[in-house]
Amino acid sequence: MTALLLACALAWCGGEAADTVLAMRPGDRVVVRNIAGAVSVEAGADDHMEVSEGGRADRVAVRRSGGRVIVGGSDTRRGDRFVELSIRLPDWVDVEIEGRRLDVSVRGMAGSVDVRNISGDVEVVGARGPVRVNTVQGEIRVDDATGSLTLSTKTDDIRVRGATGPVEARTVSGDVRLDAIRSERVRGEVQAGDIRFSGEILAGGAYRFFLHSGDARLVLSPNPSARVRVSTFHGTFESDFPVKVSEFTSGRSFEFTLGGGDAEVIVEAFDGEIQLLQGG
Image (cartoon, rainbow, N blue to C red; front, side):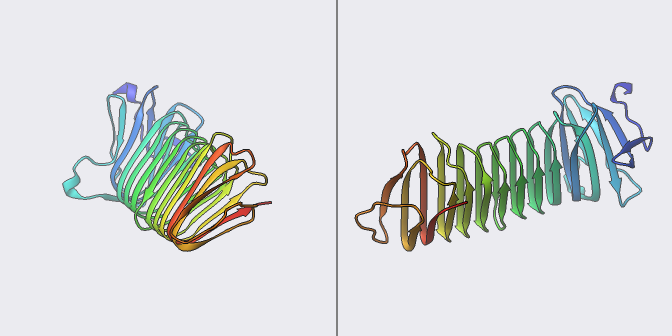
């Protein structure tokens, strides 16, 4: 037990007394589960995990099981604990968060981040490892990530800014907004909502956007080099770039090349407007 270095209310975390302190080991994964409310995870400067809980006198359990450090209860029949939880970790630790009614914030982590949630917003900032977020109801927002992003929600928006790794974003009823993207692999899918993309089209990259009912607005850097395929069944198409198409008829696909055609861009919208615009 002494190896766990569990201590109560004696360490400091972000200027507040930490309720629990635990030494972390290479390969550790922190698993947060069976809680409701809000959880904030932030990269720290040393090799310890510090857990602070607000709003209750009784504490969330923290225990080690091999290479997993579990935060929260294990008996799902008793329901989720409602808490406001702050966790500070070494940035190399992998993080897994499971919730049903949980707002999540993760900042500055280099390990993998895996969030599975039913209801609640998820924010990830400055991630350098792979990020996976799957939620039913709640907005997903990711800023300044360098690792791969796999993001999915059923009934809300997905917003990504400043990503440089592969991006995959899917929502059923909501918008996908991808701003200031510099990635070689981007995929956006929407059933009922809009897709907005702004960023660079890199040589060898693949950029694919699929909508059923909604508009696609792509703002590209000047002088892109790409092979472009556009398809819309009931909709319109407009472009700031010179497009050589002999005939455009709604319900058909057509292709054209911008510059040297070094990347691939595909935009398919069953019912909606497609805009290909030039950014500053």
